[in-house]
Image 1 (cartoon, protein in one colour):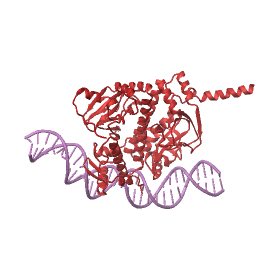
Image 2 (cartoon, chains in turn yellow, purple, cyan, red):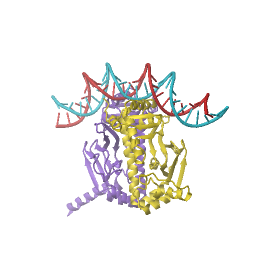
Image 3 (cartoon, protein in one colour):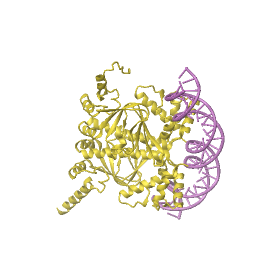
Image 4 (cartoon, chains in turn purple, yellow, brown, red):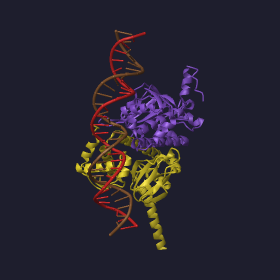
Length: 248
Length: 248
DNA sequence: CGCCAACTTGATGGCTGTCAAGTCAGGTGG
DNA sequence: CCACCTGACTTGACAGCCATCAAGTTGGCG
C-alpha cells in the first residue's frame, strides 16, 4: 500500500483527516470494525487532540483519570515507580495503540506515560466512550478486545521476565518491535529505537550494560547490525532461535 | 404431595442461594454496585455452575472462549507455556475473582486455568454479559474496572519480576495473599498455601529452591512461621520493610 | 506401612549486576 | 564552522545473587 500523500496544507482538510473515519490508523485503533455511520459518532467523541514534545508526560501516576488516549503519531513509554525510586517500564506504545486503560480501575492513573519523541494523541473522554459503547455493540466488543489484548500482552511480558535469559529477552523485544513496525507499514528489518538502553533494560528487567552487551553479541553473531539507536535485523530466524533456548 | 413440595422448596432455596443476589461474594465479584433488580437480571446469566476437583483444568490455552468465570469457592492458578516447556504462572485467583478475561482478545484462551483445590465456579456467557452491560450502565462500568484492575495487577507483577530481589518478591507475594484473605474474612496472619514452592517460584520468576530458602530465611528472622504449606505471619512490618530494600 | 511428591539444605557455578573508564554522537555557543 | 559539553553508549574486571546439582527429610495418601 502506498503511503498517503499529503498534497495540501489546507486546514479544513487537515481537520477532516483528524477524524477517525479518515485516520489511516483506523484499522489498528479503536474504530476497527465500525460502519461509516458508527465511526461518525465516534468522531464526535474524539474532539480533543494534543501534541506532546519529546519528554512530555501525557499523564502521571496519581492524577485523575477521565479519558483514554489513542496515539496518532509518535512513541510513548509507560512506567511505574517504587517509593525507593526503582522504575519499571511497563510498555512501549506506538501509533494506533491506546494509553490510559490502567486508570479505569480506580479513576486515578497508576502509571506515567511519557512521549519518547514528538507525538500527537487523540483524547477520548471515557464516560462518553462508555455511553457510546452501550449503543454500538461493535464498539463495545472491540474495546473489550483491546483491554483483553493488553492483559495477554502483559502475560507475555511476565513470561519474558520470569523465565527468559537476557539475550532471549532482547531477541523477543526486537522481534516484537519489528512485527509492530511491519503492521504500520514500516520496514520490519530497519528501524530506529526511540528509547534508551536504560529504558529497554527497565522493560526487560536488565541493567543497561547487559542490554548493551546483548546488542553487541547479536552483532558479533550476525543477527543484527546496530549503531546506537539504528537497528537492522539481518537474521530473523537466528533471533527466533535464540528465544527458544532454555537455560542450560 | 408434601414430600414433593418439600423437595421443590429445597431445590428452589438452593437455586436462590446460588444466585448472585444471595451470594456472599457479591461485594467482591461482578455484581458489585448493582441494584436488586439489576442483580436479578445478572442472575439469569449466571445459570451454569461447575465443580472442579483439585488439578482439573477450567480451560486450556487454545480452546474456544465463550464465557468468563467467577470463582465461587476454591483456588486457581493461571499459566502460560512456552513451546520448550517453560511455564510462567501468571496469577493465583481466589473466590470472587474472575477468570478467562484473556480469551476475549482472540476468542481463544491464551492461558491455562487449573484448580489448586476443589473449587466451584459460575460460568458467565460472555456475549450475554456484553448484551446485559449495554443495558446496565453500572454493570458495564464495573466490568471495565475489573479488566483495568487486572492490567494494574499485571503491572505490579512486572515491577516485582523486573526490579525486586528474591526475598522482596516473596515478601510482596505473602503480603498480597494476606491482604486478599483479609478481604474475604479470613485471618490475615494464618493461612494455608494452595500452591507448591515450584508454582510460587514460577509466579515470582524464581526456582523452587530459592523460594524454599527465602521461607527459611524469613522464619530465621522471625518474620513468619512456616511449616510446609501452613504460613503464619508474625511481623508484617518486617516483611514490608524487606520489600523496600534496594539491591545494594 | 510404604511410596512418592513436595520440601529443605548444602556445595558449587554462572549469569548478570556493579563499578569504572573510555568512546561516541548530537546539540550549543563562541 | 568547529570546539566543547553532556548524555548515551560500550567495554572490561570483578562480585554477588540465584540457578543448578545433589542428597536427605517430611508428610500425605493409597
